[in-house]
Length: 573
Image (cartoon, helix red, strand yellow):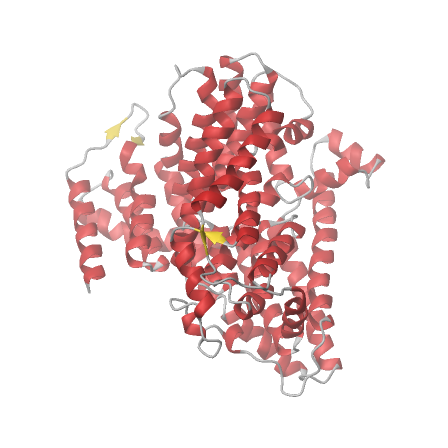
């Protein structure tokens, strides 16, 4: 009841604030919303933390954005009515986008695939096999971390595969689902963003190329991308941070509470392990068919099909996309050296990852169905029923993603990101620029829930600004790295980020519990990134000194500030 009162008061205060506000119109008859452009993300994020209901929070955030948008055109009553209509319009537009539709289909199809593997006993067989390797909480977390690293090629694939596969193992070894979702989230975008070949590379390389063209320089954009990797402090330090907490068995903040609770839970009462999670998941309720032979191949073959087909699909999809374009340099490269490293990298970057992963998941599902029918585990009709039930378990994920994308669209229309960028001072000392870019990118990404959008906004500004403040080519590289890693930091913290949502759903944990336990860790690594990363390199210290020092700081922070999860000594690792 108290939550409802707080939400009601918050909304009332928000409306009164708007009623007393003023919008300034420019000579081009467009509206400058200024600080009001921050209303939708602020409403969504604050309400999400208060109510712990992401769907309602996103819905009200979109409503608030529509209210702001239409208040400039008419009366309060008109804005109120139009804000409801805007929710429908933005949701339909989000679903109509091919990329978004591909992501929704991919998520649902992988949910069906996981259900098939579970019904055939493949998931349980993998869990049993990993349990033999995972002797205790330490090795369980390290194995999860390694799996996340191995799925470097795409952050969505990482979030949707590692969580469900490792969930039974972490449950058995009494590792909290909050920690599982954190490991999954911390090895999704951070590793995909710095991998030499991934679905991120083409986009990042393209932004770098455009940024250098804006200052009149023709460069090998991929080489510049590689040069930025040592400056991607947050990505590197977060991956190390996860490993340190796992090996040392030390946590702090809400994660410490979650981990200590998990160590004490009763195996016969799963609610004690994750008391705030929904118990309605069809995947959680689904058990292998009675008497079925448990074989890891019932999981390895479908998942292997998904990964192999996805990798081949990334190449073919990007290859065909480049050939259909007008970039003669890339076309000649693919025709002359189609299997060179550069050609593969360019093809991966040009691929439509959402469509490819959907196609791969669909084919993997058909393979799983055929295996189950051949083994007489189920009939074709039962296979399809199982697949659909698995898809149902992730409908809530699709709904959250649709609302998050709709919120992102209305934020774009309000000019939220552009307003935040305008706050950047033109007269700052040069050494502060990488740190300021990192912080600004974090704020934009946190508020909008998209690292891609943040990169696209900041990169065209960061490279010219860095070139204007310093003639040093290395300074431009570190500034570009600050854009790319700052966007991932903000996205990692944001409760409205798609990868954050997918990580919590894959791990089977309440979304806001995932955000609450992950946020302090992300902030600590973010602060270390600025103080021991971008400030020193901005002042001229060489990266070969700064990066190792910052990594040592991460280790020391976990060691001295973390508290032991195990209240009693344990002999297993």
